[in-house]
Length: 216
Image (cartoon, rainbow, N blue to C red; front, top):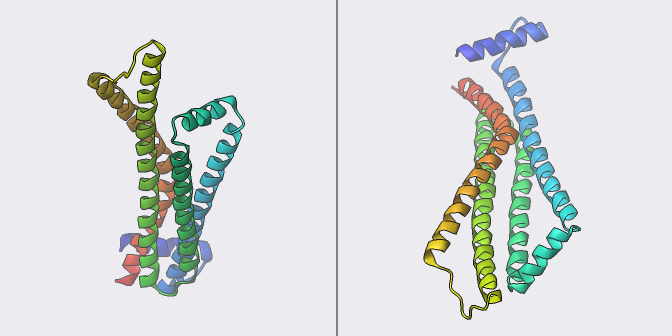
């Protein structure tokens, strides 16, 4: 209860109250928690908007046009489009959940419900981060493997080789390099998420711990 006592003392000092009740502390923690969840929603929207803007900008470049042409040539353009639609749909679904959790946490009226809302929010945010990281790693390795395979085949055909096959050793080496690069890049993205969402979740967890003391 030491942290709760310190919180009460701080409340008294800043508001010049002679005594602070647990309902008043609850209101303060409720307000802070609602603000944190709102920022989680805002950050996720900004993340989606940034990704959309970058995609829009690169779509006008010669490099992107060449990539699309290559994907069409390989006959996987429909799969490429479907994957993008699914990714955006899942991300929009998570953003919608963040918004609904913000609305829900803003109107809860007791400590137990607020604690439950905080726990659910933390769980959903972690699921969102895990999905993005897993999707990036999987698509990077999958698409990279496809590029290496077709690149090797086209090179051999240009050199006059009929019915070329990719050596198993080369496939394994290429796959190993892709996995290492994907792991490094995924770790970097995780670091960005840790800064963007980790600090908010840490603050939310502190509120949760204080609410548990009130609920005892």
